[in-house]
Image (cartoon, rainbow over all chains, first blue to last red; front, side, top):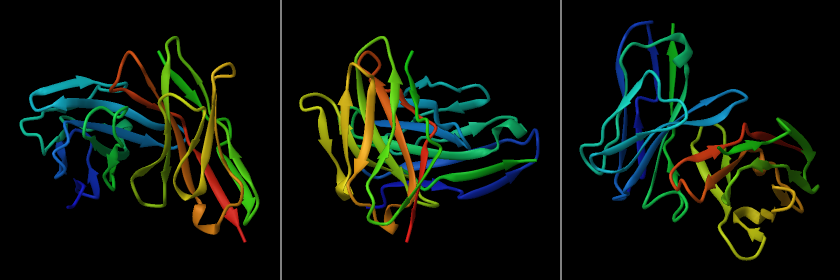
Length: 114
Length: 114
């Protein structure tokens, strides 16, 4: 049981490049979400999904796309990276919404855009 | 909209001393409240949560928090800290009318000194 797995752990991109941050969970959780963590600002919700085929925007969705084709996977896409997207990204999952059960977090992806 | 304020960005304390980490929230509707802990280079882990019932909530590792509705606060306490408690602590709220948007505070770094 691996929990929530994020890949890669570190990434450096040039401005304008695209990439996908991967997130996978093996706990059959319905709810998954992406956060970014910036110094002094805590975690901010980017996008979330309440089940396969269903996604919605969080607090800071601009510049990011998501899809949820399977229960297990919830990739986050940066179509044209900008320096403002330099951050640490966390994926989280829970059996239902965070109210009902504990949210499990991945180890994070540290992204630098130069 | 909801917001969370953690006034102290860093709290230094000596080992075996008591500690209180402050959290205040703002919301026009009733909320659920959470404390998460982040150890260095790791994801977040749930410490405790308040959903309803007794306003004093006990969590893991000897931590507890008290919900005060009139003061819109949810302060975290521990009577005697250990070196291993050194970490960043995040307060978070979830409004009862939006069960999926967990809003985090900016975090408080607890630094326990020998």
